[in-house]
Image (cartoon, rainbow, N blue to C red; front, side):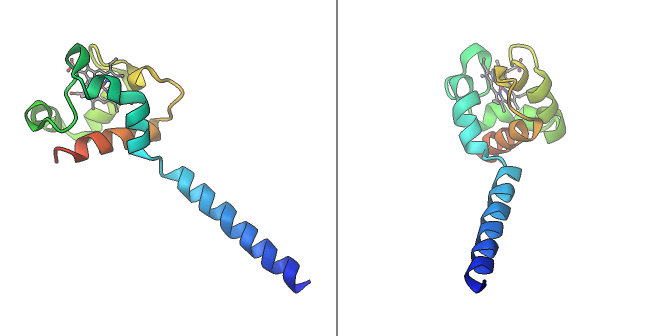
Length: 103
Ligand code: HEC
């Protein structure tokens, strides 16, 4: 019986860990998958990640506006980078990742 409850504790801990990992989306992975095509090359006039001059006027709008524009779209910037299966939280994490390079 002791072995069984130890196994249960381990299983519960593993489950709790995977739930936590999901609650915090990996902004870098999402950027690489959904944003890099434009934001690394500057395609269609996208501000390039790490280009402080391009990001300065955007950061001045405030991060909430940048989240909204990323989720709903903004001019040539497609909603969620065109990847509508991303959750709002995942898009925000990728914005945070992109912006962290110039903050
Ligand atoms: C198809 C190309 C494309 C993809 C893919 C793309 N973007 Fe963009 N993004 C743009 C363009 C173009 C702009 C500039 C829009 C403008 O300023 O008129 C932009 C602007 C932005 C801005 C600045 C908005 C503002 O208010 O100044 C943010 C933040 C942003 N993108 C985040 C993202 C994120 C996060 C992803 C991935 C989930 C992503 N983009 C994917 C093309 C893209």
